[in-house]
Amino acid sequence: MMSKQLSEKTKLHPRNQHRSRYDFKLLIEQYPALKSFVTINEHHPDSSEETIDFSNPEAVKALNKALLITYYGIQNWDIPKDYLCPPIPGRADYIHNIADLLAVSNGGKIPEGESIQGLDIGIGANCIYPILGNSIYGWSFVGTDIDEKALINCSKIIENNPTLMEAISLQQQIEPRFIFKNIITPEDKFEFILCNPPFHTSQEEATQGSIRKIKNLENIKTTKPILNFGGQNAELWCEGGEFRFISQMIYESAKYPMQCLWFTTLVAKQSHLKSLYNVLSKVNAVNIKTIDMAQGQKTSRILAWTFLSEKQQSEWEFEKSNQVV
Figure 1 (tube, helix red, strand yellow):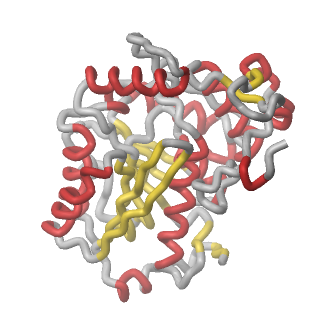
Figure 2 (cartoon, helix red, strand yellow; figure 1 turned 180 degrees about the vertical axis):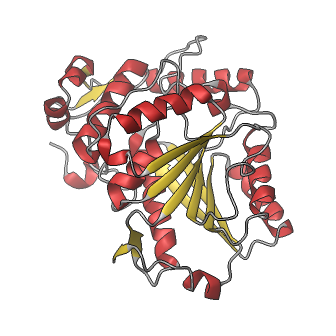
Figure 3 (cartoon, one colour; figure 1 turned 60 degrees about the horizontal axis):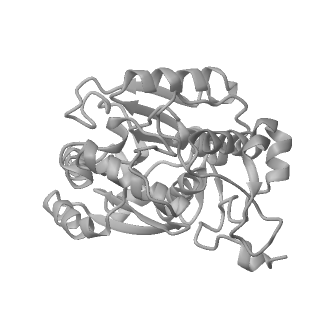
């Protein structure tokens, strides 16, 4: 058997529940339908090592269902065919890193409870960030998207899981060229905003990216744009790609400087960081952070910024929340 040190995914956040290899016996107990997708990993030195075919979208969805039932108390979760099926360990890392970011502004304590409100830009059909944030830290969320079908599915997930009913609200962005307009009202205050932006510049680029992903997973050549994690057009690409989307997000954020403690977004391409920092300097962001993340061979990072001074950050009202060290 492999040692715990070797089997642990040490690149994940220390509080991430998925640092160890998947316990398929436990997951199948909680969600028996997963069993039909589990096989022995022929490429692993441990001859009893179990896995799933990560190039099979149905297998990935079954694994997600099992993880959500086992670790997050979500009994009823599903997504329509071809919508983005997120890798939960990486999504949980984003949530844990936001918790650390909030703790910096809160005397080193992670603020917990429903009074801590996040805004999820581009919630998709999976509702995953609000689910994880609410399950782990008790936070409440507003989730937005331009895709009505995605929001309808999120609504079903919320309705079918009573613990989410009071914690997550949804709002459609009716003007796709905007990110925060129509969403943030003068009365709103968010502890954080998170976003997993579309990072391809075109449908063709998204297709090629999916082909490369399948090739890496299966070590075979393919020309079929099968998406193991799915994804609709708006989830995968937009005109100008990741850089243009995040740049717009930054420029719009400057219109709401006092209504959010930390604006954050994932940045897939490290080459974009320097230019994004330049954009942030143009809007006079007071503090900018880059938080590196990694899952397996995939690396990413969170770009975070605030318009509040250290004094204003320390004066942010957390007192209604429960707090943990």
